[in-house]
Amino acid sequence: AEASFSNLKISGRIQAKYNYAGMLCGYASESIQCDRIETSGTIQGTNAIGGMCGGAKQYKTVSITNSINRVSIEGVKWLGGFFGGMENYSGSCTIINSLNYGNVTGSERIGGFIGKCGDAKLTNCVNHSNVKSGYGILASASAGYNTYYCWANNCFWLNNVVDNTGTENGFGISKFEEKNNCEYFIPNSGNCILPNLEEKDLIEILNEWVNFNGVDTYRRWTYKKDENGKAYPVLEEVQ
Image 1 (tube, rainbow, N blue to C red):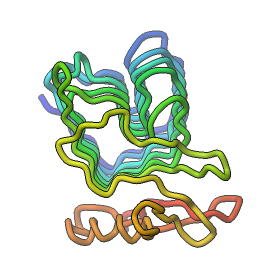
Image 2 (image 1 turned 90 degrees about the vertical axis):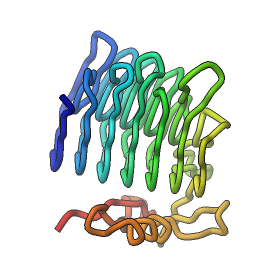
Image 3 (image 1 turned 60 degrees about the horizontal axis):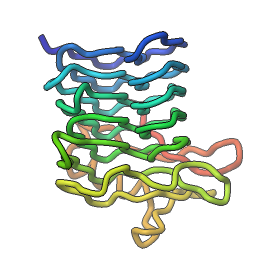
Image 4 (image 1 turned 30 degrees about the vertical axis):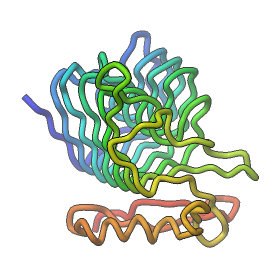
């Protein structure tokens, strides 16, 4: 039976001896739906590690909405801030209106949100972290030989060359079913700008999507400032 989680905050420290580790679930044998989940802590291991979910069985779906990950991950391959690796590429991971702060460090198929899965659908998401040897949003997606299924809309990742923070590239694939408004952003003292989208304001674009798709369903975005006085994106608390 499909599992559903909502309004949870999970924190911990995991030293994984085997593949598939996540703060919410290591391996999903059935499809799961998550809404308003916040995870924090650290996970160290080898393969298929995600801040929320390490991996899932063939033909299953992982769906995550309005959620925040702060888990820092260290491993080898199939690592993602939200989702690690989908078995045999057959299955899907959908992430909507969510935010990653957790750094991801590994060597192969490393993504700010997803390491590897069958098909990926990402919408209105932001990665504000460092992804070493990987990609700001998604590393790998495939549903068959040389066939890529990825939908990415309004997905943004940190890339600040001056401060040497963030990630240069957002995606480890070049073929998409659909891709719109996916670019890196640069923080400054007042906001975060999108240099390849006419220097538009990051939060304005995110909230345009929320306003159009339903403020009762999706959390709105705003800015806070870090210890260096630079603005960074946050999801507003639910009232």
